[in-house]
Length: 465
Ligand code: AMP
Ligand code: MG
Image (cartoon, rainbow, N blue to C red):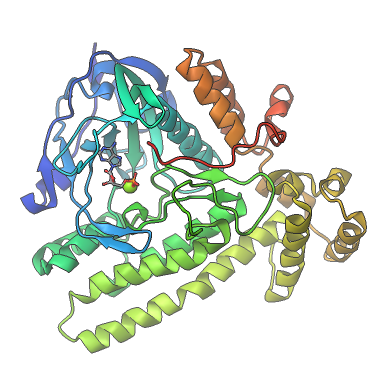
């Protein structure tokens, strides 16, 4: 089959210590379950060849490699992680002039696999496909999904033998906080400097040196986490190796969107302490930036001065996050220019929602109608809030633009995966159609807005990826 990918690789030209050159591991079959044609066009990819997206054939112009990185996992430093089941095929310059990574995930073992098999099963592959594309349609910076291909090989997990799959992930880059950490912790200052220059050129060309880069990443992460909060998204594994320099969302392992609002909501079965709970995400983003700062400080001779500068930048981040949060939640209740005085109005609504277990998405989506009231058991309390809110003359058109009618609900994702495992991709297609226009849902897909019944609730998501 004919396939042309206009590769233009830069990471492969960095020093050898940044990665291991390695081809993906061939698999038995290559059944295309999903193909993102508009994204392929955006990337300048012509034709297709399933065996490439299964990892069996290496396409012309690729320079396959597994990237090296480290990271803090649940607060503990792991001195070496790396792509344990991913291979970067290379990069392309897209139609808008942006450099994008093309990576296979689940493409076989690498020197960084540790105890893992280097594989992925169909469930997490389709989950990432659906959720990352939904995030994109919601206007949230994210890696994208180009293809999902079934390998015809079993993958063994706690549940037993499961169908294997490979995801093709597109990213602005796969540079993480952990990519900086590994060189800083090893005292490889030349590599750290090379990486810093590379990251600035690729993502934040206006940044002035390492401190400028830190500032730019803090700003990008502040916007990102505020945008997650505004749609009720819980990432689930905000480890520093899952925190990008570009400001894109990455690694949709045990992530989930909330149904009923609760600030302390956790889905990930491995997050026993609730470190990455919904309401903790801003604090964790700041903590992650403190780790980036710690790495970048190693580049300076005058450490005392560097610590002072970096501290000031990281300490400014909670304020940036609050501003980004206020702007987004203000818009959700129809205020185009919210001020600090509007903060209690927003917080009081969230408190009512939490007390009454109101559905996050549907409350905001219905706020401009009388139906929002139905989300609350204490109607008097809601009416009192609504009277204060109406006094602020909310812009209903703004609310319709900013509040999605649909998010990928967990019970729908689980049902979609179950069907796909049984060979039925219709629920996947239907979900993808609905999620592609989240602010303007066709009437025949209206059932997908419904929160889970008690029996349908998915209490936890598993990292068993
Ligand atoms: P994650 O929690 O998915 O970000 O992964 C953390 C680390 O574990 C990364 O280095 C991954 O490459 C590695 N990893 C996760 N799953 C596997 C697997 N099945 N085989 C090999 N490495 C894996
Ligand atoms: Mg990861």
